[in-house]
Image 1 (spheres, rainbow, N blue to C red):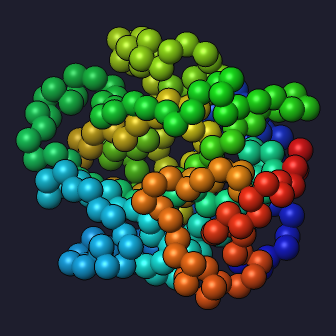
Image 2: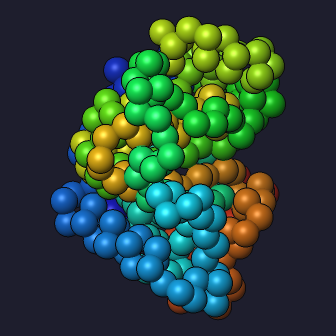
Image 3: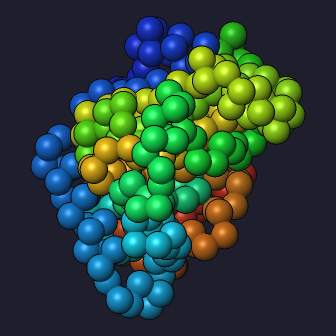
Length: 272
């Protein structure tokens, strides 16, 4: 976490991000990191006492669980949130120093009630398109580059092929002021407007919350595991339920305390 090596998007990655609203960073996590993070999430999924450990869980049957507020549970999940290959890229897109806004993970399989024939009628099957901010409110252009004050990294801890529930997005929606509902209806009526991400384990999707995105229904027999961290400028509050305890913050190395706690508050260091 103390790595001082300069990390930035390549011009090609930055152009892809600005045009489409996302960029897939391949093989960012090592096989060891990927394995340790996945193991931590499976332990968490099986833990009967998550509430006492400040973790929330939302279950949708036996096939889908969303876990949140993860960094106090296991060191490897903190390692992801403060990853030296990812935080500088987030800061580049936000436009300045950041704080951790939320951490979540999803472990899911195909819904046992799903009709496979129906799922195969569409190229993509997004389960709930949404976005957390919109262009013009939470985004800005500086030095001809797109910036957003709410940015996420989504790590694929399992390989995700065309039938394995890769994240679906509406490319370009991050810069549009259309009402989200109208864009979603248009994209669902013509799935050529939708892109579903395919990735190998260890790759990370970087995107702004102004991009319309969704989990995608799984058609295969594989289980998908993803790990997500959200970031904002330090003066923005964490997502409710993602408050990190002051006792935990006190145990952290000084160099990452502001990232995890948001303690820099209004002292925002711009990084255009």
